[in-house]
Image (cartoon, rainbow, N blue to C red):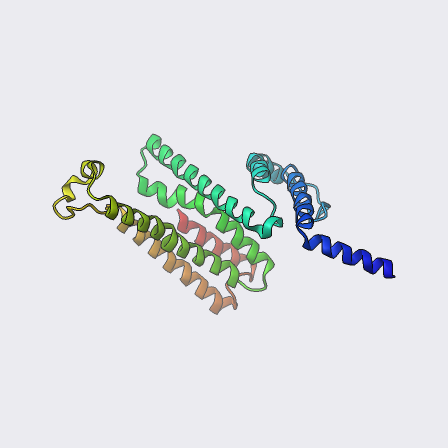
Length: 257
């Protein structure tokens, strides 16, 4: 018994040390590599969570996402490494890169099909950049006993997009142009505003901003109304009878169109 206690203490010390973190990270890295090339979910021990064979849809999704899964498994460190900070930081970098890719693809698609940027922005770009939120909300809805986490995730994500995603780069641009002043580049692009802003300024034309805000506001009001009706009628935002679920999901999905 004393020998077993000593072994447990040694294992605890090893896990709390830097070498322990490295060993755990190496194990997680190998698990990530195995899961990225497999169609079945695996747990921390590497064993399959379910003995159910993959369906045709599982194979299609696996083949479509295989390049991304392998890319992330190779370049994104395991979460246990250094308390997860390298994983968190590189995940943000990859999310930014994928967002830029989606935006460029949407602009090229709109140019080829002669669709306005405002339309592609509220359809293709909105769908592509919101897919992580969609899967996160689904996971929260399935695992939690209530709908708080799934709904708060959506509203919180939109708040981050507006307050941080727009506010931070615009603040940086405003500071830059207030310091740089009216450069030749600024005059060539915003010469008509030279009289109003002789020392230069960060200028963003509204364009179709009003249209986007109106569409978002109308969709948000309808979505909140559906959630409220479900709470009053069925006693909760999620779940309930099958047909009301289908009707609610269809109505919310139609808002995207």
